[in-house]
Image (cartoon, rainbow over all chains, first blue to last red; front, side, top):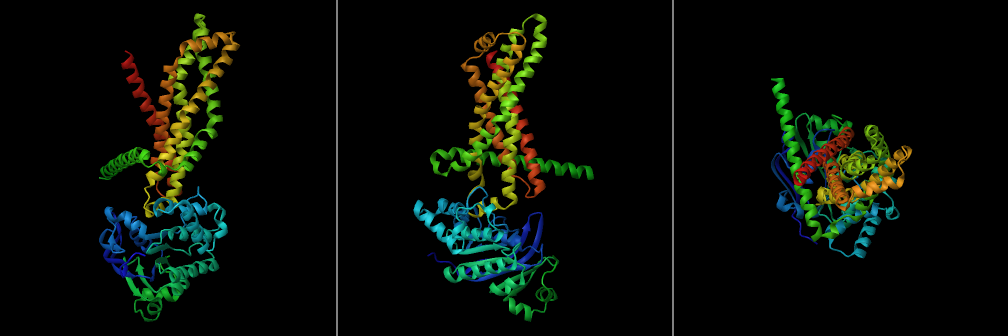
Length: 251
Length: 263
C-alpha cells in the first residue's frame, strides 16, 4: 500500500478556468485522506472546471493545485495518473469494448499483472460494483446507471488514492442514484479511497458528503466550506441558505 | 476595426490549426516509429475493425465506381480515337490512365468520403463523450492509442481497393470496346503490352501513400473536434475536404517529380 499524504488534494488561491476566461477566483480548500468531499453549486458555477483541473485535464490559471502531494507537471503526470481515477458524467466507456475490456484496459497498460491475474482482477472489480453478469456486454447494451458503475470499476482498477466523480447521479432515477451513493460509501469503507464528487443533488450530498465546498457563479468564488449539515443550519450567506433550503440555484 | 479584428482572429485560428497539425504529425510519427520496439502496444482489435470497415465494406462501391470509370473513359476516348480509326488504342489509354493515375485517385476519393470521415466522426464522438479525456486521465496518449491502428488499416486497405477498382475499370472498358467490335483478346493484349510491373507498383505505392493521408486526416480532424454534435459534423466534413486536397497536392507533386525524373 502506498503512503499517501494527509491532504490528498490541496488548492491554494487557485484561479480556475481557461487562459481566456477565469470562472472562479481564489479557491482554497483541501481534501483529507479517506474523506468524501463534495463540490457543489448551481449549473455553470465552475465545479466541473475544478474537477478538470484536479484530474489534470486543464492547467489552473494561477495558484497551486496538488494531488497526492504532487502538482500536475509533465514530470509528475505519469505518476499522478496512476494515483487518481475519474468517472465522467457520461461514464465515458469505450463503445468498441465490452464492459470487461473497459476495466481491463488500465490493467493491461499499467498493472504489470499477467493475463489471468488481470482478468481475475477486472472480474472482481465488476463484481464489486454489482455487475459481474454484465462483463461481456457492450456499453450500448446496458443502462446509464450500469455504465457509471462500470466506469467506477474502471477508475478503481489501479487502486487509486482518490476518485473524482463528475455528477454520478445526473440523468439517473432516484433509486439508481441512491444505489450509486451506497456504492461510494461501501468502497470508501472497504478500501479507504478518498472521493471528490461533483454534485448538486441535496439528498446525495447529505447522504455521502463529509465536507463540501460551494461555489457561486455570480461572485465567481467559493462561498462556503464545511460539513453539509453545518452549512445548512449555520451559514449566514443568503446564497448558501437558499441553496440548501430550496435546492438548485442558477440552474 | 471590425474587419481588422476578424482578420486577426482568422489568422490566429489558422496559426493555431497549423500548430495543432504540426504537433499531431510529431506525435503520430513518434507513435509509429516506436511501434517496432513496443509491438504489444499496437491495438490489433482496432486495426482489424478499421480494416474491415475500410476495405471489405467499401469493396462494392469502389468496384462500382471502377466499372463506371472504365466505361466513361472508354466512351469518351473512343469518341476521339474513332475519327482516326484507332479505337483499339483505347485499351492502351485506359491501362495507362487507370494504373498510373485514375485507379489510385478515384479510390482515394472514395476512401476519403467513406473512411476518413468515419474516423473523424468516430473519434469526434469519442471526444464529445469524454472518452478522449478518460484516456488522458488514465495516462494514455490518445494519438498513440487511436491513430496507428487506423492509419495502418487505410494503408493496407488502399492498395487492395485500388487493385479492385483498376480491374473493375478494365472490365468496364472491355465491355464498351466489345460493343465497338474490338475483340477481347486484342483488348487484353494491348493492356498487357502497355502495363508492366513498374507501372502497377508505382500506382500501388501511390495508393498506399493516399491511404496514409486519408487515415491521418481522419484522425487529425477527429481529435481536434469541438465536443458538440455540430462539431462532429464539421470534423467529418473537414476530414473529407482535407483528405481530398492533401491527396491532390501529393499526387501533383508525385506527377511533377516523376516527369522530371523521366525527362
